[in-house]
Image 1 (cartoon, rainbow, N blue to C red):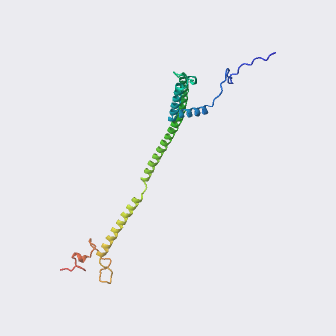
Image 2 (image 1 turned 90 degrees about the vertical axis):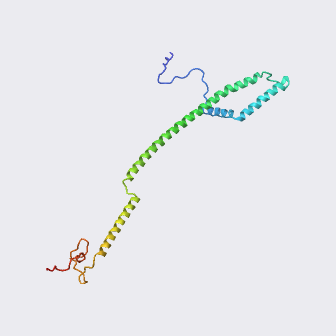
Image 3 (image 1 turned 60 degrees about the vertical axis):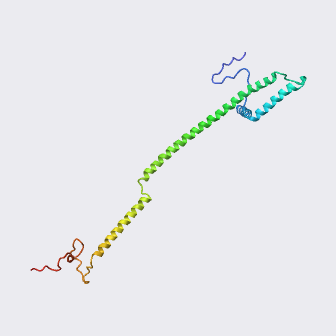
Length: 205
């Protein structure tokens, strides 16, 4: 007995039927097409193509009739140029598509980097603002110098006032012709006799 026919399984891909075309390396074919498109877009290609067409015209016009392979109307030349144009256009489009893909990838990378740089810039701006706020509460070198200079001026003024007061006060040491140290002083820090008052006890008249 023959084995029963197996039903197709749904969990496995179906094998393609019909003619199998050879697989082509897309990357290699793309590089080859880009090379052709790049060479066709140069001035050297135009010069060489013009020379070939001129030689073609001269040979099929001036050569003996038996040697002419494409007589007047140049049908074969027209066919060759049409075939060249029919292949050149898809090759150029393929090269342009590959260049567009590279440009899109580069644009996405540039956009990603720009986004990262914007985020870094905003972060640095916030950090700088925080540092400025923190530095506003810290005494700077100029502030400390100004405060020290102000304190030095106040000390100099205090020393000058003390020296002026010491010069204005007489010698009150006992035994040197002065008054005792516990003698009362007037508002001008001078002695009572200087204000026109008599020394010693007041005499009754």
